[in-house]
Length: 414
Image (tube, rainbow, N blue to C red; front, side, top):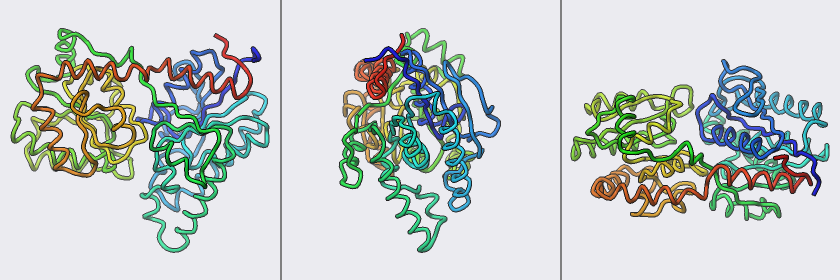
């Protein structure tokens, strides 16, 4: 193997300061690769307009390309904007061909349509990282497709699905982050000899349990009542994240357990399926103000998890929820829907409780089961922490670094 330093461009549609799992993991892994000695830069779209076009995030330089703003759910209106984005991306890769060896793409929807063919023409390697099974099942998101009625919309969907499959087969390597995605990639139209399963990662040194004294101090700092049993949810306040299901179940839980408090970290404004106003109205109507705190987006997620007793995720779909790993790493038992990799990561009755998505009664039953075993939460938390050490960011970054360097015939300069 050569001692040449591997030069990587990570391309993602989401990146901080936007709050989302895809952006968060792209940030963590791109910085993890840099710490492994690779030369890494990030290219993303300017999804939040105030974000600077160029800056350094952690240890990697980041460039943001127009168009600005959120396009998910925009339907036909998004198509010309996305096509211009694809063209800009292709031109950039061609112009800077001498400055990189390999491209990693987060997601398979739009970016690979430019990155994979252009890199193939330039003789560069490409890794496409599938973020969610829905990227395979729905080449156009259901929220966008709902605005693209008629035969033309169906033709666009079918054509894009074939194009995405053809492009994916031309990628050098495909990373599947979950068992479900690995199985979907066995379909004949998607079969690829270079599929590698690499899970999401968690910063176990940042997301870790704290002492009882530190937990009490955190509660005081964050304004959390000391005597409450505190459940935390981290994610967008949207329908697809199951927030309407959660708040409906929560009203029944509060009626039986008046000492509980639900803290929600995240917001819904600007997202296609925002339900924040509906959640607020439900809280007022059912007089849940003393039992629910909507904090909004926060950069103190680790502290809220460390101050909590239980984590709850009612999401309707996930690839491999980063927040689930973060909660388990903080030694929190979890109540979660069986989406993404949750059923493989959570041990029923030992590190958490599982229920199907979109089912208020099932979620309520799982919450009741968790609350009935409060005295066991410390032991469950210890086992939860042990169960996610295999997903330590350093270990996962090493796997990505080895994959990149093997593909380009170089080595990380440590």
